[in-house]
View 1 (cartoon, rainbow, N blue to C red):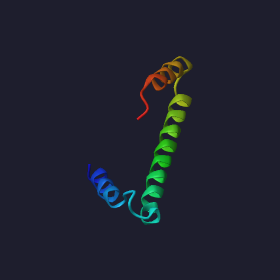
View 2: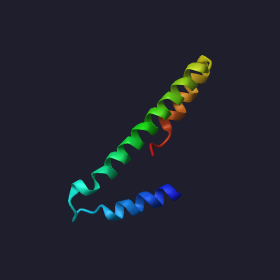
View 3: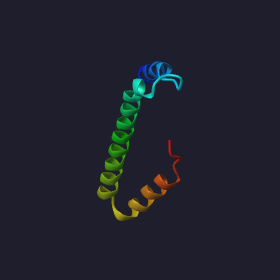
View 4: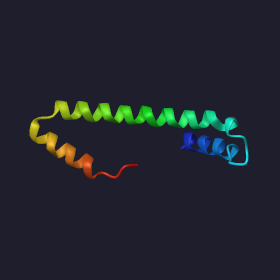
Length: 70
């Protein structure tokens, strides 16, 4: 929760009326965080699928396929 509040406060300082370069670092940080999260989730899913027996692989992929993307 504290991180979200911090990001919101940074977002308030970064509005469209200001020069984009003043808040470019915020964009970079957000992109890096998103990429890291996606990579970690992808590795975790790959390890889980690889470690599971074949009949569980299908169930895992089905759950992943139907889960909403956040």
